[in-house]
Image (cartoon, rainbow, N blue to C red; front, top):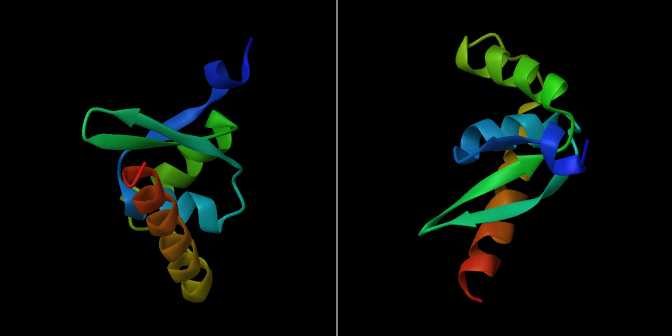
Length: 82
């Protein structure tokens, strides 16, 4: 099994920010046309965090979420400039 086989992907930057703020390891960005996927390691953890997020049951530090959002935006826009 390769790292990508157990990866979790999302195009939603807010969902990705929540997952990233919970210390899930970001593998990278995967371009898909004019959009990109945020790719995380450990799909089991990320699926759990995603379920919490979409069920509006996510509990965490809002400052960490905002910092994660800024980091992912910077990463996304730096890729778009390539």
